[in-house]
Length: 154
Length: 242
Ligand SMILES: Nc1ncnc2c1ncn2[C@@H]1O[C@H](COP(=O)(O)OP(=O)(O)OP(=O)(O)O)[C@@H](O)[C@H]1O
Ligand SMILES: [Mg+2]
Image 1 (cartoon, rainbow over the protein chains, first blue to last red):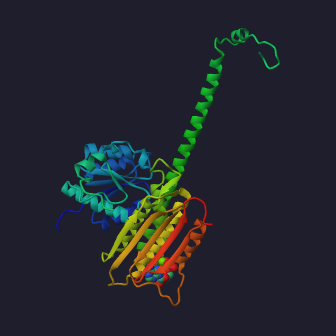
Image 2: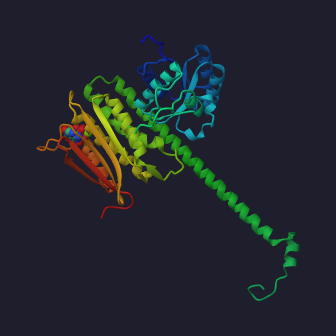
Image 3: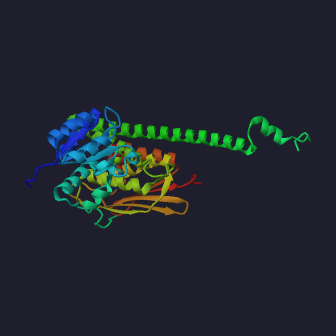
């Protein structure tokens, strides 16, 4: 495969989480292109580097600004955002334009599976199957990628 | 008629308080009280969510710290210990991830978090030659029992993944959860090498299982599956075993 690795921006104010997440991103075959801790940093990095995917925590250094970050990335950049939050229920119904959410505390394996899954979705415009455990897709994206066209396997 | 037998003149009373209907007074008091209670409840719920949020974030922090430390560790024995701690923290995290995601915060679907747990553990083991077969019925337990239960399942599954199939030996692990009268039954079986009958050594993993089963008032039985090992944990859904 000579396919370009997915470029990922990490938006997370907890430095230890972000540091470990960079390793996970690389291990999942993606490329970590930067790390932002506040909404301003996130906009700057997103407009400069145009990442394919931004992993966005809801609570950043300047408050609960992650939702707005996701919305602006969806509107102004070509990439998509994925929320990482402990409070899934507080996200807006439209996911602020983000493609989905991974609940905290996520597991090492859960995050890697989510990244590989999204890589296929973003590259092919089509889901390779149902979303892996721990990943919840926004309804719009689940439909766009045909994530639920697959039978439920138990 | 008043209680003392005297006749109160209600018209006089309402006139003096400036209200035409005395019920208005009562309604106002009820409305005020209801609002105070509603506010108190909202505040309590908000606090609960705040604490839940912190617990989840701290669990994430703990596992990230352990993962980072594991990356730096060179000694395989140290790595193995860290992996063990990570696995146990992950079992607890799996439960907390699902907490507050459903409307009911008191009850907990065991099959849902066991399914997550299996996906993580089987995925991390990277053993494509081990098939996992599931038969999971929906069973709810009290939220307080969820974390110890997740730890028990994690230890037993970890043993099946690590010990039953030495490198090169393929096989199957079965995980079943069913209701059984007032109890529910968790079975973890493998068709691997089986337990050595001679000197049954209890490591830290099986010690944890033993202690938590005591706490949960559960019965844990290990039998030879010929081939392999079958462990059955039977847990009273409400109350204790007699
Ligand atoms: N399913 C199984 N198949 C074969 N052997 C098993 C199985 N489960 C347990 N054992 C044996 O029982 C021993 C004790 O297990 P126990 O979980 O207590 O400790 P451990 O797995 O060696 O280490 P840890 O404390 O990290 O769990 C194991 O070392 C293994 O030899
Ligand atoms: Mg063990």
